[in-house]
Image (cartoon, rainbow, N blue to C red; front, top):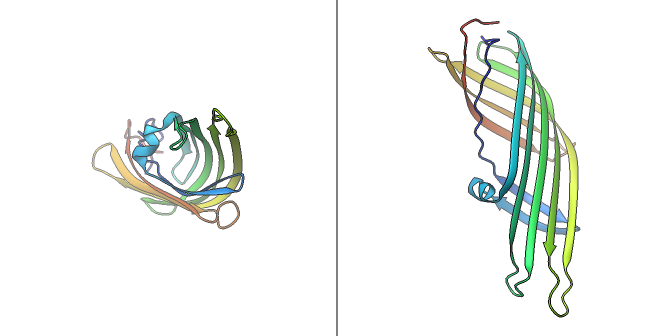
Length: 187
């Protein structure tokens, strides 16, 4: 049973990126773990809103991050800067089908922008200043399992899969969560 008075759910995130980044026709394989992402995080923000009753829930989840790295090119020592920004907004509708199981559908809008700047060389080498952005929409199917504990705490796991060739070929996420119920009154 879900409490109408649940006001707080802590969020901790480990992000990783695995895929291909293409800027102006130049593809590069990208595999970046959580530690590398946090080292290069210039700014990040998350917001999660949910409204629920006994049988239904709707949620809105937002993520923004700005990653950057500055350095020198290996051979010529020119100043270089790479930048990536991502905005993801997800909306879900979930239906409770068991005491601890919810299933639903949703959609995620992704917008990613990547840029590369390399300063011009002292003599002949031209500089580089390129950027590209892409925005796409993914339909989702989702599930959430929540196990109530004997106290006001509960824990669970939530996940979704989507894309299906409409936006991305395939997109997925799985995340565990812990929540605290401030009141025993249930809706």
